Length: 216
Image (cartoon, rainbow, N blue to C red; front, side, top):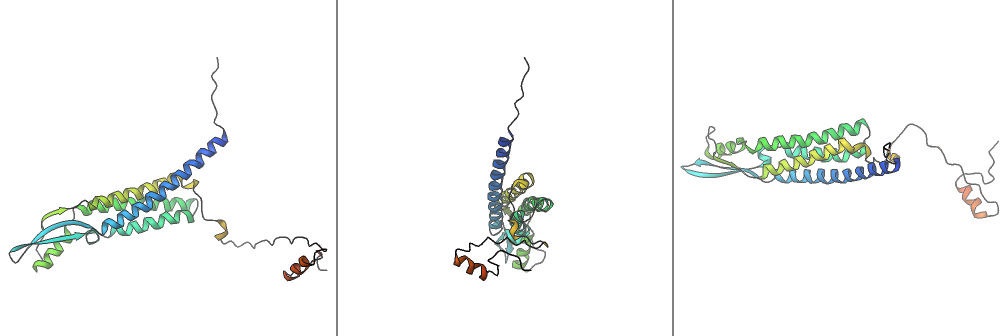
């Protein structure tokens, strides 16, 4: 007995593709916006702590994420702008913007992981507090906030990967906002009912010939 291979109906395939596009769009928007917010929030928090010896006693030092590195905050803004720009471009432009979105997430992850072990910001504070340019921070520790920034970067990276995979199925800005050099065609005038005077007056107001004849 010959086996029969079921062929999916084109309509069902199209519906599944449209459903995947909608789901990926919603997930990309959510993860991209949330990732940018998380990354920006984390840079405002305390990333590292330590002490410096000042006048014979210990002096507590702290550094926020923005003191350690400005890369995560800058890339979060770039990623957010790229997420919006995805809908303003098409084809190759959308692919390039999607790649920029993904790279923004990667950059945030790398910068946050590097910043978790960076004590240069605390060394500068120790030098200022002690008046000794060679002073350095002691008992250096970092908080969990750099890893929160990593989570934000991963979310932005996910949005970029979704845009690269499903972006061609996402909608774009309406074509009416696009400008082209071709002149717009004027719609043909509706025929005027000679039995209705109000239509004749409206046609005259529009600069149309109510008789429907072309001028000689």
